[in-house]
Length: 71
Image 1 (cartoon, rainbow, N blue to C red):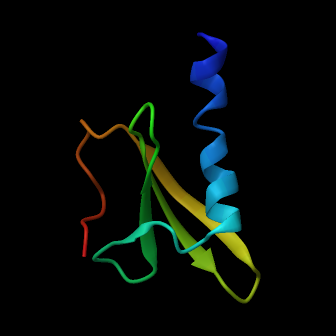
Image 2: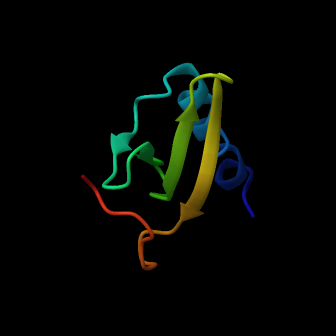
């Protein structure tokens, strides 16, 4: 796998940590979605405010059936 393919998606967690509410809210309360730019993967996550954590629930390719729906 080319180095760029490995490096780019790994930047998504840093974006979620620095800006935890950047993702689009989903129909399920507390779940947010962030789309990676180059590979268009869907990252579903939630923010645990008391512990100051971002919890990644799943990473999916957009062609797959989605677990969550946009609000």
